[in-house]
Image 1 (cartoon, rainbow, N blue to C red):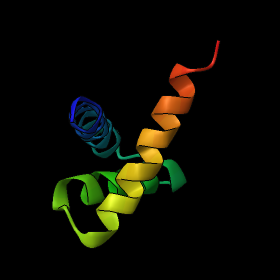
Image 2: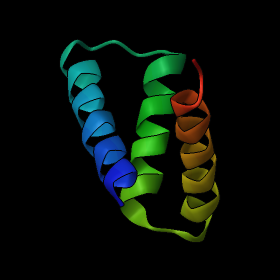
Image 3: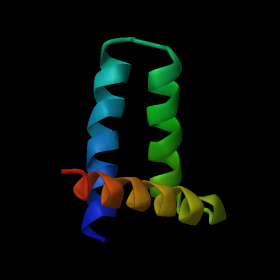
Image 4: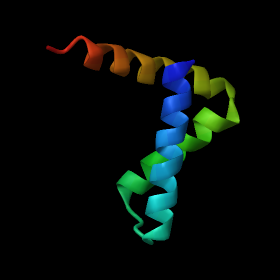
Length: 63
């Protein structure tokens, strides 16, 4: 739950910054796509959430 909430906050801030700066490109599209799935709670959100949790877990174990 903490990782998901942090991801939503981070992606929300990134979305705001990208929209405010009028930057449109592949990165902003990816950020908006992920933000939509984390907040919408659709069936695809579980798969995306699992991938993000796996990436966060892998990053935590890198030393």
